[in-house]
Image 1 (cartoon, rainbow, N blue to C red):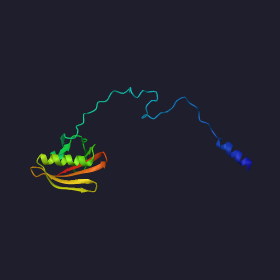
Image 2: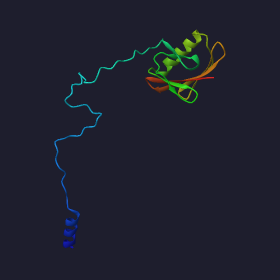
Image 3: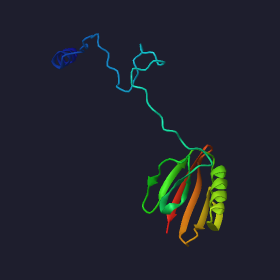
Image 4: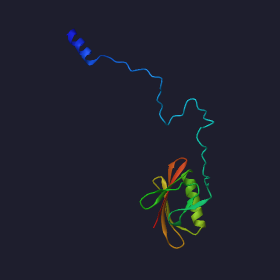
Length: 146
């Protein structure tokens, strides 16, 4: 039996060792350990000024969108915006603004974690607007013009 095991080990080549190299492979998304994070090698990036609460931009069907919302993500028949503020603050601001600019809120209910509103502009165009909590500090606003 011992002879068989020895023959098996010899036939398979036995244990091998890997060569030792001086090179270390580092993932490309890692920062060099010797780099000074206060002085990045890359070009300085410019940041776009972000409008805050109280400013507005034009959304789908000319519906007003809070100025601090992102550019929106296109869904099937609507746009979905991320807003870096709590849901209730965004809802209150939207309600005050649309009422002050001549829109009529036909329906405004709190349902499944968000406000569901039916809003009509002066010319009678209807919008379904949803203001839903994303987390404690951000909101998702969905606007569907009809």
